Structure formats: C-alpha cells, structure tokens
Image (tube, rainbow, N blue to C red):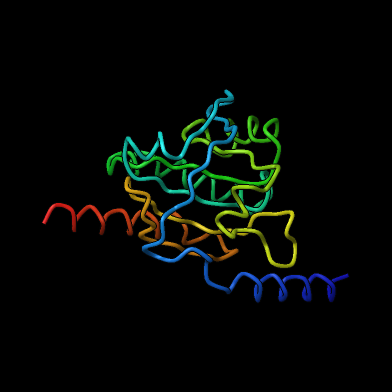
Length: 179
C-alpha cells in the first residue's frame, strides 16, 4: 500500500509541475456559475465581479480534503488583505453546490465564495483539469484585472504558496497602477 501511495504522489507531482494553460496577458474566459458564500447559494458572474475590481480565481481539487481545507483557511485568513486591494477571492472545484455550501461555512469561514463547476465547463475553459484525474480541478491560481487580463498564474498541488503569491501579485499590480 505504501508503495502505491508513493507512485500516486510522484505521478501527481509530475502532473502538477506543468504550467497553467492560460498565460499572463491572456484574457480570462467569462463565466457564470452557482456559488456559495457563508452557506448561502447565489449566481457568481466573473464579469460582474470584475466590474468591482480584480479577482483572485483559484481552482482546487476537492472540498474537505486536507490540502484544500488548509488552502481555504489561509485564503479566509487573508480576506481583509485582498479586500484592502479591492480584490474578490473565488475558489472553484468540481464539487456539487451542496458540498460547496458546507465548505463555504467551514473551511472558508464564511469569508469568501466557492463555486461549483460539476459540469467542468469553467475548469475546461481555464485548462485547470488534473491531467491524470480529469474529473478534478488542479490547484491553479490566477489574478485577473478588471479588463479581464490575467496578470499572474501559479500551479502547484502544494497549497502553501497560493495565497502569498496571489497577494504579492496584486500588491505589485497596485503599485504599477499608482505610478
């Protein structure tokens, strides 16, 4: 069993080392999908949210898995820092909306929304499906400006740097805007 786990972990690490499919400067595909915020369901529209400011869009494999819960907790803890930069955070996975409703209350602490992409249309448009397990989203983070430009992308199954990296990208973007 231990040998199988090592093989799976190695394969996942190799699959996650590829670059995110959307590059810096690409236009982010627009989408509308069902989302959950603080246990309440609503329709999330990327274009409507971008009208208010930049968006940190992050994809994650599965609600309530240890890495995804840790990442959501870290995004929740940094919500005020993102808000101070005018940014909205939205997480997306292929989990159904019922799961996202619970996840939004628990791991996300009611501080930011998570969207359901059970049909995988958003995941596919951002080329965020895991290569070896296409029913799951890979762990990919994007920073998108109000004109739909992607200014940052980061892909790693390790959740440790997604929050710090996206926050730094937003801070750097804000500095360039003020010059």
